[in-house]
Amino acid sequence: MNDTSIFIKKASGELELFSFRKLKKSLERSGASEAIIHSIIKTLSPQLYDGISSKEVYKKAFRLLKKSNRACASKYSLKRAIFDLGPTGYPFERLVGAILKQKGYKTQVSVLLQGQCVTHEIDVLAEKEGNTFTIECKFHSNIKTVSNVKIPLYINSRFLDVQKKWNDNPDKTSFLKQGWIITNTRFTEDAIHYGKCAGLILLSWNYPKNNGISDNIDHYGLYPITALTSLTKNEKKLLIENDIILTQELLLVAHKLKKLHFSTTKIEKVIAEAQKLCNSFL
Image 1 (cartoon, rainbow, N blue to C red):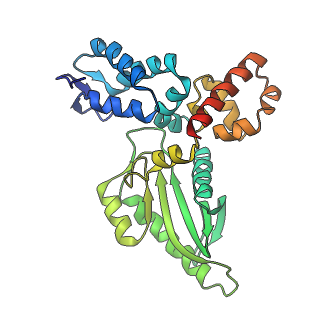
Image 2: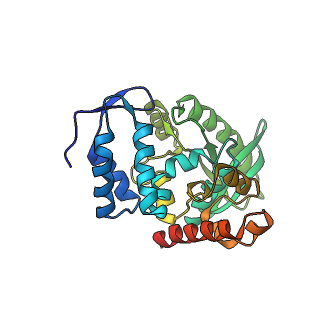
Image 3: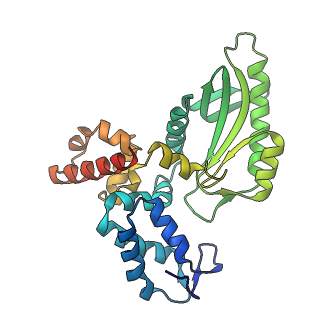
């Protein structure tokens, strides 16, 4: 399918030439078959017009994909599913902790550490091979919100305060090595440059290339329950309130759904979709 001369409006308000290649790539990433992708593009093509929002294009493609394959639709909606983990940042911290655990780290979420000057609340504390890392999670509910250079400047000062106190302790069992900042949106170029210069690790939705949050979620199959299309908004909220954040966790505690007053039919539908999503990863 050749690209068109139609301009779409991005979330930032900027106009951009619509690209079927980009749409095809995002659908491929969801695991959709060539036949399904071709069908979606064929159906969607005549519905496009100058000035259509990227959000509207996504909604149309998502609805079509959902009809064909719910598991693929769940993967396709991953970015919005992460936003739906809000409004608090705690579920995102749990997701980050799960990613780090898969990478071989021992993790703790929401830890108070005494610095040289003041006490700091650390979102995630990770330890591996005798080194400890402090991870600050910057969760945003709005796709337009970015982390500018002020964020790593502030986080680095906190890290240095904690590092001084930690490494001066003669009873320490590990070395406090490095600070991380992880966000579900993106960093400005200045923030990235400062992070590199200061020795911080920065992860955003798609940074570093091929190792961003989205890549790690896909790699380890750590899909949030907010990606499941068989759950309503209120049902997702209820599960999060009961500390069920990931689809893998949902399958392990499926018996809790009855206690949360999910009907038998609903439970069967949700579990079937969750299993397909996890099986597609495996």
